[in-house]
Length: 119
Figure 1 (tube, rainbow, N blue to C red):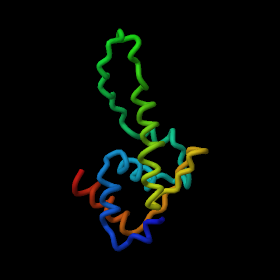
Figure 2 (cartoon, rainbow, N blue to C red):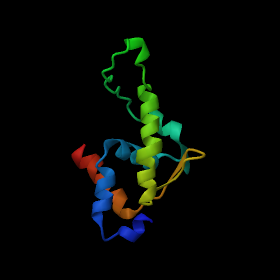
Figure 3 (cartoon, rainbow, N blue to C red):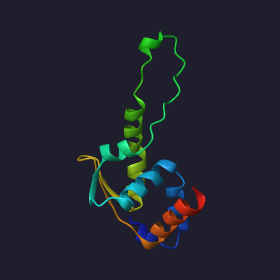
């Protein structure tokens, strides 16, 4: 399924760009000179926010979860990049952890508008 097949449905594009992390990923992919970008490069371009610690009866030293960096990497790998891949905006290879951007005029205009007018 590619975005070109959904040109009649702006809802798909809007849903994809509502998430700040996905917009940041797309903006990086739009502006990079590289054809292919590694997942780690994307992780390093996004702000890391700590997730609140979960309540647990264990002492704090035993409650250590993934770091903010690792959590972000997991979110990109399992959620954001597959979603972008499903609609054809990117081609994500989970084995090599590489991303290739497939721009469309509609998406480019929308991202430019959001960047200049709304953020």
